[in-house]
Amino acid sequence: MKKSLKTLAVFLMIALLITSVTSGCKMSFDEEETESEEVKQESKVESLSTRRAKVSIIQYINYTALNECCEGIKQSLEAANIEYEVNVGSDSSPEQDCEEFAQNTAINGGYDLVITIGTPASIAAYPSISSSSRVPVIFCAVTDPVGANLVVSNQTPTNNCTGISTAFNITEQLNMINTFQPTITKLGVIYTKDEPNTEQQLKTLKSEAKKLNITIYEGAAESVSDLKTLAAEMVPEVDAITLLPDNMVSANSWEIMNQAIIGNKPVYGVTQTEVKEGCLAGYCYDFTELGRKTGERAAAVLRGQSAADTPVELVSDCTLYVNTDAVESLSIDIPDSYSNAQKVKTSYE
Image (cartoon, rainbow, N blue to C red):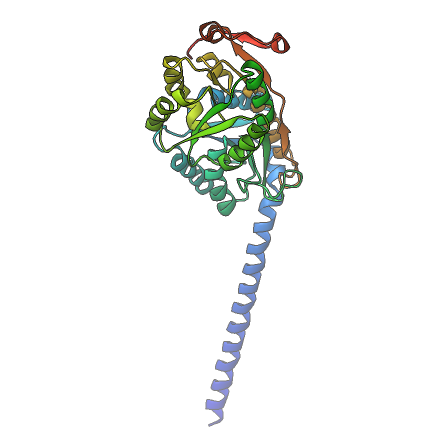
């Protein structure tokens, strides 16, 4: 009986010892796992001092203005000795492509930062990056970052995202149109139906046009094929057409331009490419410079600056471009107040 009790006691001691050791190992493992996750982010800046940082650039579509942004970004990254990879969305499904680029970037890892070019690309890519990794996102040429849910506010982004915003001045554009055509009363606008920020731009356009006694005629396109039809229907009804910052329309503005030429009506653009393709005039950004600013912002964040605490830079400085070939064919004089505008001739890039 005593022998059995001794044996039982030994088994109980061994069981208690195993339980204690196992429990101790588990606690030690959990603490180590938590610590390694915290150290991973803290050591990121240190690791960049011993290797070249790598950036994923996600561009909405292959279009001149966005290509110029990308070129400026690459110039700044190369100057800072930062590696980069460029992914460009297709004409058929750019939003889906940009989302997939972002998902692959987040899953595969190896990138220290993501740069998005254009509002649609930023909206498509940011959620995948923010939900799957702690990699900061820097955007380029986004009209309304708050409305696009990229930042909480332009002054204090809060999200791990910041960048360069292009604040298109609709009032300035309308005043320019009214100066070129003092008797204008009907102005058409063609835009992409689901283009982010369109609603706010249209609201501002209508409000400002009303002050000048100009009625706005709208045409909402769901695809590129709609542009020609909308333009053909609109041209006979208006005195002129204006474009807005709209990626699909800008990339295919010649569809609208051809119908305007047939109807002998002026079109006003918002990019140098549009003016060179035949728009009468337009206030335009230097997109290469926007790209350089974006690349510099990305380099600063990679050096340790917090994206969440870095205010969005609002760029509003534009240059007025006038197409002298369009001026001549439409028999419209360049107003004296715009005699110093940048003059271009019609050309296709």
